Length: 275
Image (tube, rainbow, N blue to C red; front, side, top):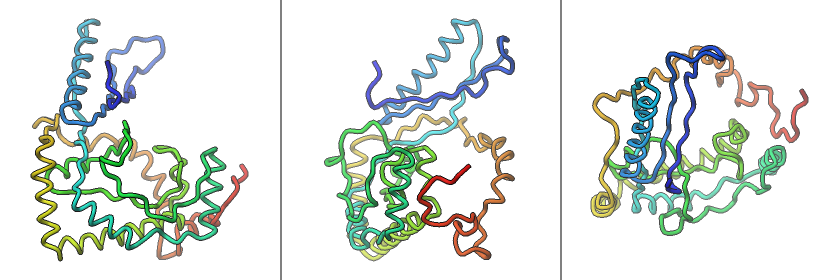
């Protein structure tokens, strides 16, 4: 039975070239997600076993290649508490009436829950106060976290209640909302870096937590082998197609004061453009 924390995604990257013709070769890309090293490995092995079984049942052969891997996150509590103190010191951005109006318009246009841009710093997120979740970030910061004490910081650069991994989450890009959020986040990061280089006790506490808490919880155990090389070729074909198309949208700061000016977009645009 599948655990609630397990998930998988699988696009067919090659299903054949013509309809009504059995292809001589087919490809599928599986993406597995889990919470612990052991559970990730179990999913990985189940996926390989399924592929082998399918090949055996159909009298075909199969090959497998690991395209990438990201370890589970494990943030460092002393560093997180230091960063949180700086986040509170910096405070939330001062949103203008235009910012709030744009956020509400974007939510309305996309049938999302109406909620203003936050004006107060939220509570520090810890395992003790977080609700059970089967989601989470899917970047590779986890691999760094198991080498040195590490944390992640979220910037207030987007509109609440938009859909993740979706174009709705791009509405705030290049707007003052994004700029103000990044500016606030950068200040908190810079202040935390200063704390690290000027406060030896913080470094000691971070390392103690890393060795006495984190490394006693689990052991870094990636499924990668010596034969698994970075798949830098993976998006090569797509980039050959789209990079020339993207070039005309590259920001030219020498000519335009903001990217919105370059695009000819008036801020805030509160209604859907015609056409």
